[in-house]
Image 1 (cartoon, rainbow, N blue to C red):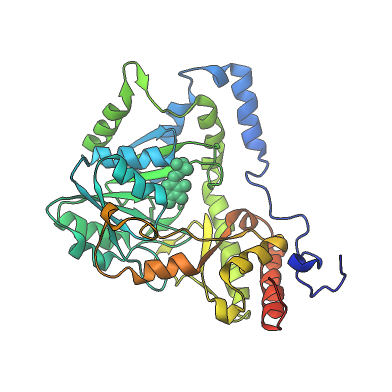
Image 2 (cartoon, rainbow, N blue to C red; image 1 turned 180 degrees about the vertical axis):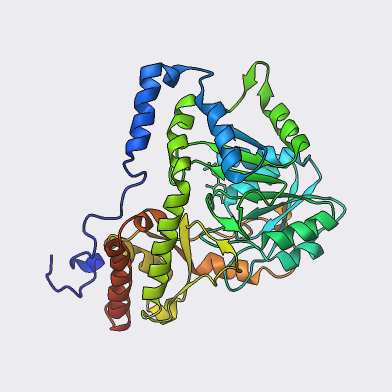
Length: 387
Ligand SMILES: *Cc1c(COP(=O)(O)O)cnc(C)c1O
């Protein structure tokens, strides 16, 4: 290994963060205590212990809604949400062309057709001004996902959707703990969905939940998940047990991540035009930063996107490319596109995201991210050949 501190780690130089990105989940003494309690009381192996019920109550309370249901995954939660909104064969469901792929596939799984609209150019979140032109008499629902630290203008979404009698699934899998105009993300839509997958901010390895204000939608979801004596594809007692202490600390964790994300944005402003944070969300919104999305400009930064990600990972910083736009590489017979999907394609090509665990750390952790970005940028514009 060369000792030249300027040599990128990808080329054999010393990494900014030799130990690599922080692991996730991080050790949590409260989770350990919850597990010990599950062992001591035997709830770890029970069908019906106290934890699932308690978690559902606590999720409802945290989100200030009357009803919450837990289930096996965030993907299932979106499916159940669409079913509660009575989406079925022949119906249309509107979504952004830049979104989580399984949302697209779930619409197909119900025999419905995805109708794709573009995203905003400045933050690659669903463009609510495109909704109205996408609605037809077949439109049953819209899926709106807050992605990569961005927040959808969900109040406007709800106004347009109400006017046309279209149900809204607000996918808050990437935004637990975020608020919009003081109200929790996931509570603006007719149904809100959460994920507790292994990388998520609240994690049990697997798991999901639905949030409802409306008692009838809640009942329909419950009924659909019901098979005889119990729910199929449920969350286990053990999953619920480890989630409860995390939920209790979520607001504190969100504050810390936001503070660190803002420190990172501030330190990046001096590091060239190649990496732009998502345009700040409207007043009164506070994001949750499951991932921090950036608009990456390969020519300004000096590297193709794939090499940027590789170079930063070699420095020990967990960057990744963003989602694939759902219409790219798919037969046009599988969706209907409304208007140009220019910005979704741009997001497909240029989105990079930083994984959240480093934002739960200290100021020094955040400074390492900025340092690694500056180092790789200096090398790239200095003519170092990365590959
Ligand atoms: C992770 C995620 C989901 C689904 O979560 P699973 O629990 O992994 O099924 C849905 N939507 C978005 C936006 C996600 O990031």
